[in-house]
Length: 301
Image (tube, rainbow, N blue to C red; front, side, top):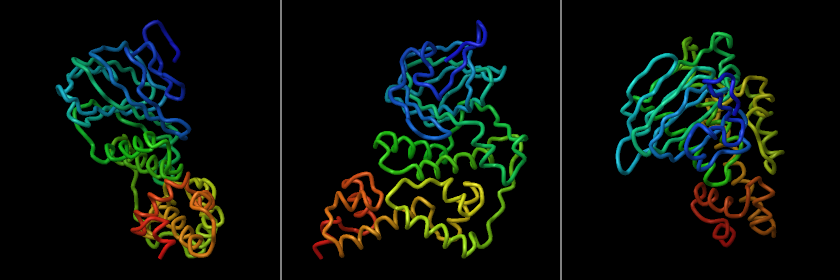
C-alpha cells in the first residue's frame, strides 16, 4: 500500500495485506498464486474508511450477517449514496476511481480484485481494448451470476486449490465476459460460435491434453494450440464438446484412472499423481462423482 498524496491511499491487491491501515482488521484469508485475480475475505466491526483508490478493479460482495443487514454510506467517483446492502449485494470500484465507505454495524464481505488487462485480453475479440471502461456501481443490487463465480472461487481457496488453475481460468474468463457485457460503457457483441472448433484444432487440443494429464494444464496453453484468445477458446470448445475445458480434462483424468485401475498394480496414490490429481483423496472424490463408485470399489469389480 502506498500513498500518492496526503489524502488518497492506493490499495494494491497484488500485495499481502493491501488494506492494512485502512480497515480495522486484516483479511481473514486471501487467495494465492492466481494470475489476474485476487480474492479476500474480511470480517470487520463498525468502521469508516478514508478516501482511497485501487490499482486493480475491485468488486466488493456483501455477505449475510446473522444479526442485521449492514447499511452505510459509500462515496464513489464523486457521488455519495446510502446503501441498504442486500444479501450478496455488490459494489464495483474501477481502478483509479476515488472511493470511501462506512458501515453502521459489523460486516462480513469479500473483495475480488482483477487486473484491468484481463478485461482487455478477454474482450479483444469483440471490442477495441482501448474502449473498455468499467462502470462504478453502488452496493444496492445483487448479481446471482457473479455471486456463483465468487463462491466457486472461495471454495477453491478454502479447499487449498485442489481443483486446478484451469478451473480458476474458466471462472475468471466467465467473470470478465459478464463484466464486459453488463458493466462496461461499450458493450461488446458476443456473437455465437457456429460449429465451435475445427476438427483439426479439436484433435490437436485433445492430443495435448492426453499427453499432459499428469501436469497442470492452463487455459492459455490450450487456447494457444487453437490459435485464438482464451475467452474465445473456452466458448468454442464448449460449443464443440458440450463440456467446458475444465470438465473435459477432469473427465479424461478419471477415464485414464479407470484404465490404470484395470490394467496396472499401481497404488491409488500413484495413479492420482500419474493422471494429474493433487492426491488420492482428490482422485477419490472426483472419481466417485463421475463414475458413481470409489476407485477401490471399481478395482474390485
